[in-house]
Image 1 (cartoon, rainbow, N blue to C red):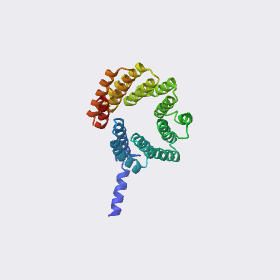
Image 2 (image 1 turned 120 degrees about the horizontal axis):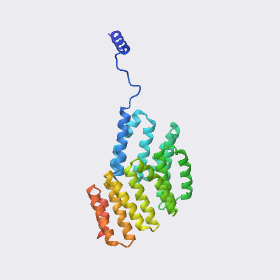
Image 3 (image 1 turned 90 degrees about the vertical axis):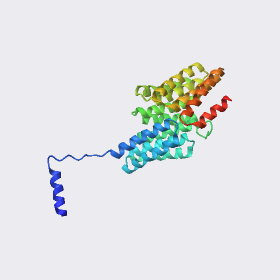
Amino acid sequence: MFVFLFFFITIFSGCSSAPKKATEIFTDRNTAIKQLELANLTANRGRYEDALVILGEARKLALSTDDPSLRLNTSISRGNYLFALGRNEEAFTEWESACDEGNASGELVLAALARIYSIRAQIMLFDTEAGTTTVEELKDQLSHEMAAVKADANSTAVANVALGLAEKQMGHWVEAENAVKKALSYHENGLFLEEAAYDWFLIASIRSMAGSYDASLEALNMAIRFDRRAENGFGLASSWQAMGDVLLKAGRGGESAAAWRRAAEIYRAIGLNNLAEKLEEKLQ
């Protein structure tokens, strides 16, 4: 019987009318990519814990298919979510692991991207967790990594945002805005709506710190436009909250309160009641 089965399969496989076998199967990998995209979308809406759960499914598929790119992208994203949750040590460990794996597997761009996110996080933490490394040194490290990702537009955009944050920390307002605008150009042209909204949000922060309140409000209005197009409630609430902060700094208290109320309404509508309550306390 086994001989017969083998003969039958051999004959069938050799038949000219038989369908050809696929040279490669992507079912699980495509599912992992969709899960990773969903996780990132969830994180962009401020639901980092939910994003970690979704990412866990993408990670399992990345591991089961042993796809180097997917393994690294899920690891880098996990570091991003952990950092957003304030789990900084775990985030840096995740990025370091991704960097090591990227170097070992020949995925040098993704290894550099993991280092860029790590440097960006260090820049963001500089005021609260200043160590022996200065922002200028972090900027130098970033310049080195930017050379490694120059052929990849997405990674270059991430690096330019990090560069903008470094320049902002050093009080170089013009240089900071110019760096972020390089990322913005890529995001606007590619219709990356949420990313473009964040770029404008960051530009607003730079302008506010420079004392250019009207220009900051203009940037926040642009952020709101993009987040409306993306239906990103978290981004919208964040921009309205920032608008209230800028208006208060500009001495426009009544308008500031109205912006905070609007932000609180949006936070409640998307289930982030704790953030709404913090704003409502400021309004009392």
